[in-house]
Structures are given as structure tokens and as C-alpha cells.
Image 1 (cartoon, rainbow, N blue to C red):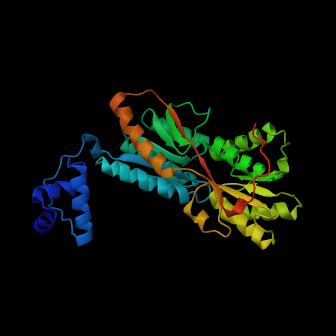
Image 2 (image 1 turned 60 degrees about the horizontal axis):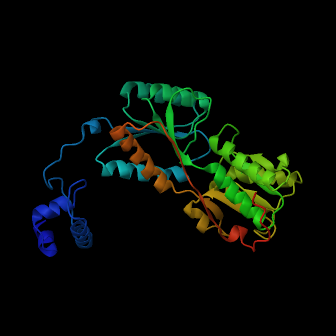
Image 3 (image 1 turned 90 degrees about the vertical axis):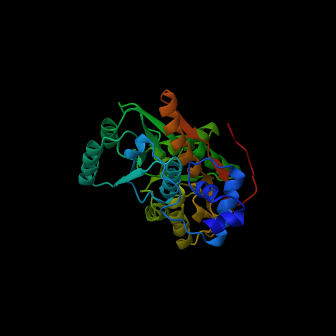
Length: 343
């Protein structure tokens, strides 16, 4: 540490403080010391500085439950979880992560664990069937936060939501496809009771109806949120003779759509345009690259943790927050805009 302090022109105590989180050091000085530590390969040891007293609540970590019952569902939640863990760590809080698949015995084990730990704060990420979500909320502290999920009117417990505006996401995608003169847009969604399926179905129908375009139910297909499930859905539609010139789905299922169209010898986007939703990095590397509705999972994670602590400080009322999506046009829908039928 002395050598690092000498190289930076500061005291060893300043170096010690700069290398620890939550300790007040001038930001410019901290950046300079950390940059020098990284460049020199400085090894942090456990005896650096005096141990700080953790917040009282840190004795009980923030508990996070992830629903993984539909498809893989983990490509986007991985980014969300990394952000939330880092934001909690920045505030000197630990988090306890629990996952639950579709197996009912596993769900009962999760409920037992929540009864045992009696979490002070609970964040529930993603999808659970309504009856199971209601059970979790009944076991959770008041005003638990549903993350990346909009909830529904069948839930009787009080809860907050921080999610994306998936209805607007669907509107953006469908309007874009109509703007490049696509007439028959296939929607591939997940199971009917899933909040994302419900939201994008609503946005899809609103845009078509606003453009006075009839909704062909044969163009609305359900899969399981996996690439393989979407590949099978497209293959089945082609085998049944369903005609379409565009597909909107989420990014993970879009991978299967691209595969199915390639196997059928259908050119993308010349014959069929494809648009996804999520903004997964893999979309930049598909052939062709995938047009997507980008959802900022990093901001979602940051906002969730900010909301968690702001609520504790100020006792703010229950709220429901939605983040706006952004259209990112790539090769899978490349083409000149030919019409604008925005309602």
C-alpha cells in the first residue's frame, strides 16, 4: 500500500479509503488511485483499513425470488440480477437469491424458506402463475416489489411493480413493420396467462385496429419463450399454409424464427421481416442482425434498488413504474419506409 500511496502522491490512509466502498473520498482522487491500483496489479488484502459497521438491516439480506417456470427466461434476467446485486453491494447490503421452476414441490420448498427467514424486503422477478404469486405475496412483507412484471387484477395482496411498458414495445414494433409495408404480421407470444404475452397482444391489436387492419387470429401463435418453441411455431404455420410477411416476438424466440425461415429457404427481410423485443446482445450478431425493441435491464435493476431504499426512507405510497422501450432497427427489417398509418 505504501508503494501505491507514493505513486499517487497521497497517504496510505487515503489509499485505504479510496479502495473501499461507501467511504468519502474526493471522486477525482478516488478515480486516480483506483486507476493506478488496477494498472499496477495491486492486491487488496482483508486487513485494509478498519472494518466498517454494516447497516443493521444487513444482518438480514435482501431476498430476491426469480420465477423460471416458463422457458429458459434467463438471458435477460442475468443482466438484471447482476445490476441489482452490484447496486445492493454498493450500499453494503447482501442479497439472497432464490429460484423456482415449474415443479410444485420446488415451489413448496420456496414457501417454506420464506416462512423460515421472514424477509424484511422481498423482490420477485419475472413470471409465476397467479395462484403461486398470490401465495408468495401473502408470505412476503407488505408492499413487496414485482420486478419486470406488471402484476394483474386477480392479486389481492398489496404490491408495487417496476417493469417495462411492453404494450408500447409491441406498438413500436408493429408500427415499424407496417411502415416498411408489411401487411400480414405474425405475433409469436408466450402462454396466454403470462404478463408479457398479455401486454404484447394488446399492443399488437391496438396498432392494427388503429390502422383499420383486421386482426387475423391465425397469425397469433403461442410458444414457450424458447428459440426451439418459436422455430416449431413458425414451421407449423408454414406447413399449414399460413401466409405472413413479418414476425414480431421476443429476442430469444426470434432466434428460432430466423432458424425456421432459413430452413424453409425464406429470405430475411426480403420475404419476411423479423423484429424482436428485449435488446439482447446476441441480436447484433445474428445473420441478419436482429431489429429489436430495446429494454434497459440495467436501468431497471438500478431503479428497483433505488425505489427499495427511497421507500424505506420516506414511506412513499405504493407505486407502479414502467420504463419506456426504444426501437433499434437492424438488418432483419432493413428497407425504406413506405407508409405511415400511425393512429
